[in-house]
Amino acid sequence: SAPVGRAAAPPEARLQRASELDATQSPHVKSRSQENSSYPQRQAVEDGEVPWEVPFPGYAPTEWTHDTVFANSHELNTGDGWADPPRVSRAELAGRKTYAFDGQTEAVGKALRFDGDRPLNPKGRTGLCGRGLLGKWGPNHAADPIVTRYDDAGRPQVIVIQRRDTEQWALPGGMVDEGESVSSAVRREFEEEAGNLEGEAKELFEKQMELFAGGRQVFRGYTDDPRNTDNAWTETTAVHFHCSKELGNQLRLASGDDAQAVKWLHVDEQGRASQAWRELYGGHRSLIERAARRLDMHAARAL
Image (cartoon, rainbow, N blue to C red):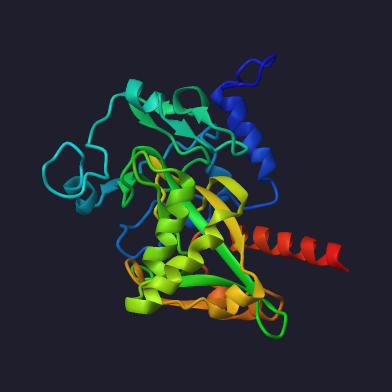
């Protein structure tokens, strides 16, 4: 809801505000890409054609939702129930929450545009409608832990996993389960994707997860993700956790769940020349850069 003393701005005004905030960036490049090979060809959308308020007479995107999403509808007895059914009422969707504008929690019905019963992507056209691989109509809330350390040479590093679906390096995050807190989700995702250990190694890893008792939120909002469509998109809460020198040296990593590999990635100027950095998944590079700036500020204060 709007702050006291300020009337809630209409969706058009909020979309304009988001456009002004992102004026230095091309509008959701990843969300219009073919980086996810399972997606059908998107209709081409130029930068200037992205905003909904710009007329686009020939816009007729393909509708596509993956069979996995349908199979996991919470209305079915099959699957894990993490997805919406094919149809959800506008009234139900309107009561959900979005972080798309300035990271503030707002009701979908007040903050976003709709096309009939379907919410429209707050950043504009993606060249594809439906839900793609995303379970929820509208915002799909994720949590991304950004775990950093300094190596023995004093160079900053971050933990990244290699995704099985696109083989890109990414933060070890994922979707927040129904009723789950963000703080629980970031720890669970990290353990599932980077802590696939057994025996004594697993016990030690779990003790080291005291790391997640702290942490600082560095971002909450819409994320540029190749799974996004006109009607379903990801919004994440990214939390930065920095390891002490001792913990950073002791922390053992092993990939699991949706990850096929895990490693420490350098995030200094030299590290950013690597292929892994250049091809980081979705909007994860900008999230890591936020944490890196926070490290830089702490280092400057220590001088």
